[in-house]
Image 1 (tube, rainbow, N blue to C red):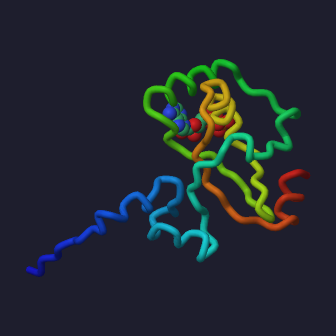
Image 2: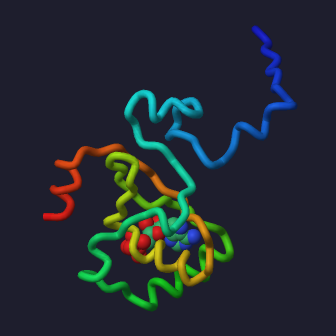
Length: 123
Ligand code: ADP
């Protein structure tokens, strides 16, 4: 049976940051192959065009706050990136829970899109 020794670049581990990874694929490859990226984004960098047209269930938000405080966000919110601008159309309760908890960033599953994709979401 073959044996493998995994050597880790100990001085370099910090660059393997949790801020960026892709789903199952090697770190960093998501953006190259066009797949979604998991990014920790500042709340105020995510535009929420439909925020005023939808209202959240306050009980859900409270439950999420309690849970996120205890175990952290388990499922990232979906975000669309168009020309370097981030748009969030769902994950409204998780977003509000983060706001109310005073958390500066939120974990996002970011997909690239075109202006046409954006128009489709706004329809
Ligand atoms: P949202 O508007 O954010 O999608 P929902 O109430 O419809 O709110 O769904 C909550 C989502 O948050 C579920 O998909 C659930 O899996 C996810 N989630 C992520 N992290 C947590 C957590 N810590 N506790 C509970 N649910 C969580």
